[in-house]
Each structure stands twice: as C-alpha cells, then as structure tokens.
Length: 438
Image (cartoon, rainbow, N blue to C red; front, side, top):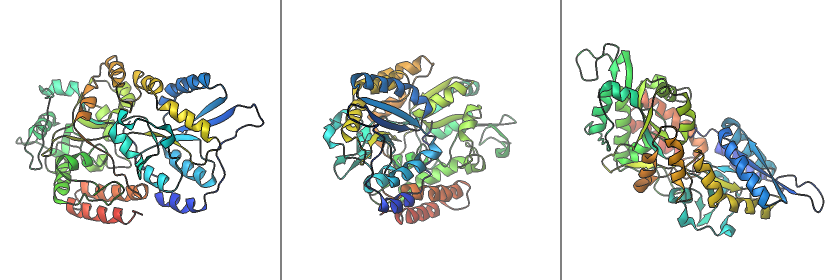
C-alpha cells in the first residue's frame, strides 16, 4: 500500500533513549547446546507469507538458530519499537523506514553493518543513501517503493482517450497532463471543466487525485519543478523557495482552480478517502507507491494500468522510499543476528519476495520476477521500473521528522483547503520543521 504516515513522536525516542539500559534483546533459552532464538519484527501480514519461506531456508542452513517472525500493525509498530529500545529489549532484527531512520541511528539503536562488507553498488542507490550515516551503512537494503501513476482503463475507454507514453505539466497549466485530466473529469450533466455549464460541485468522475500525501504527491511536484526538500542529507528543510512554492500551487490548483481533483474535504488526512475513491471508480488517475498494488488490485472491479509520472519543467522526478533490515545494536546475539542480516542481503531471499509479487527488491537484477508476477494479474508494472533510470529522490532524511510530520500534515491540510497560500504553508512548515532538527 501507499507507505503510511509516520505517527510516532520522535521526541519520545530522543528523551527516552537518554535512559537506555545496557540490557540485550531476546531470550536465548538456556545452557550450552541450546538453539539461539532470534526475533524478526515486521508490520506487513501479507509479506509474512514470503518471510516464512525465507526463514525456513535460513534455519535449514543454520540449524542452531531459530527465527520467530513477529508482526505488529503499523499503528503499533513504532510505539512498541521505541518502548522496547528504551527498555533494552528490542527485537534482534526489524524493518526500518526512511522517516524513522535518523532518530534511531543517532540514538544508537541500530548496529553498524560494516562487517557485512556489502557491495553497495549492487543495490538501489536511493535505498543505500537512505540508510547511510557518517559513511556507514545501518540497514540491509530490502526493497524499493516507487511512485507511479495508476489509472482506470475503463474510465479512459469511456472518455475515448489513451494514456500517452509521456505526460507533461507546468505550473501555468500548460502541458498534456492537465488537458488529459480535464477530458477524464465529468460532472453529473456530462460536462467537462472549461465547458459551459460544468458544475464543480456535482462531479461524477475526477480525472486525477491531487491531495495532501507528501510521498506520492507534492514532493514529486516540487522536485520535478526544480525545487528541493532539504539543503543536504541530515540538513535543513528548504521547500519554501520559489520553485517549490510554484509546484505546491500547481497541486492545489488541480483541486480548487481546475476542478480535476476531489476537494480536500474528501481527501485530507487522516480520514481522507482518496484511495477508496480510486477503487470505487471515481478517480481516473492516482499516483501511488507500487506497494499499494497488493491491496488495491484485488478490490478493484476495473482493469488497472500503470504509467510513469508526469514530467515537470525540470523533468520527471519520482520518490523512492525503500525499507531496510536493521539489526538491534544491543542484541544478545550479535553474531547470529549479523548472520541473518547477511542472508537477507543475498539473492535468494530478495528474489523470492520479487517473484511472488511482494516487493521490488533493492538488490539489482531481480526485478523481472516482480514484473512477471504482476503480468499474471494483468497489470504491467514495467513503467515503475523504467522510472528508476531517471531522476529519483529520497524522502527527507533528517532528525525530527517523526515529530514534525503531524504538524506538516496539519499545515498542508489548510493549504489544500485554500485557507492559506502555498507560500504561507511552505514558510510555516519549513520554520516548524527546522525547529525539530537536532
């Protein structure tokens, strides 16, 4: 699914880690000759199916190690991980994401994985960069989530249009993207935006979903318009420059000026329904992380297409948000934990997760299995992969983001509602965000 919003307050981890004990994680079981028990924590029940097979293969090759997979729902995952890290009882290995990484690595929770001697050039560069701090890697690159453009082929056919190979946009509304969105937007009277009699209050089908979701929406507009999110990794927020604000204005205009996107009253987080509107056939084009497919595809009654994101004035720029496999720095079983981390970095487990359609693996040369799997579901995901050949960027990698994220959403909700201007929103958000950086 679309990678969920980060909800844990980074301040909690920062304050609590001041009292971090020296206790280790896990229960080893007992005397000499007993198996070592490792705990591996994740948040996706669907991927558990693949990891059951992966851990079975690891245990067969390492009969002295038992691995227990622990699945916690996203809403509980980070709160529990923080509490466990504070108590010195965190799991031996666990999933880490970009937004949380700076908090955990700077508080000493994550083990330095230099001992693995990974050939980082073999993995996606964005994922490697996301989990590198002061020249050291603190997470085994696991997968990459890429933003692409899902579209409803039935609505395209009904509108008599086709998805072009390349879509373009400019802040002034020129380009092929907005024109296509207008053709796909229709009110209850059959009128399109720009036509006499079109009623924006009675839209039956929207051409696009522009909403307050940073990973799949406005951050992509910003970078493809020549703006920047941070001045440097682990640096300060910078998206209140002219190019960034222009891009934010474009995203808001799709809703409030051009009327090709649903109103923010229906889409603003935390209770917005943009994904549900796409599934219900009310939205024709929907930017989404490829990880959404296992959740959206089975529930959709129409054929889903995948296209590359529109090109902006600075070209196409898409977010890559990959996960990593982290090792707890205070695990009771560092040798065994590193051995499992080493295995997870190899071809066999990453290929399995690709071939069964769970993820695009971070290890290069294995993505064809992912493409082939989704072909069996009548979805061509190749455009997702093609985008990795162009400009890609990471989510902001800097401290304080988990605590800043709710405030960022609050400010940008007001912007999408039209209550404050994009310049006001950006200035306020940058000021608030930079105050959280340590």
